[in-house]
Image (tube, rainbow, N blue to C red; front, side, top):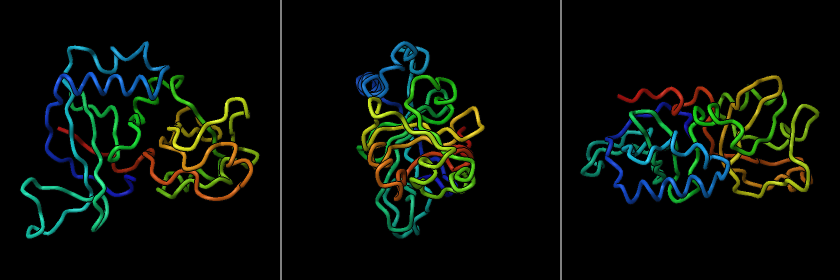
Length: 203
């Protein structure tokens, strides 16, 4: 998702009604964050919205407000929500709202997790899609059936031997299906350590 370097767009202030909606959306998606929501998005704070793009259109094709596309010719847009220039959550179109890895690192107990083996780490950190073998091998970890995660669930990816998540994003197949198939792409659009979102400097 953020393999390329990103160019920050213009920031705009989020209306108070929209900010309440974002708080509610975060709590609904991540119920374990509810005790901490006032730390993350204080009620009297001011969220900013920034549109992210990583490809500059030719001047002749640019809309009135300069926009950047994630890939040449792609209409995809990412909304990034910030507090005091610190990124908190991002959202692709109308998909699930996803935490920045710094939020995951600060509140690791609040997000569902799966684990990858050591061999998958270098692929994840190079921006490759996450494949099932990295989760189903001896060093990987998936939840038991009674705690199975559905397709579309946003999960934090923990790497074997590491203490902090290296990737966060939505699953493209449920964990029981991953166990059954043992192959295929299980996450194709996430935010990983060292990617464009991680490295982006926001004034």
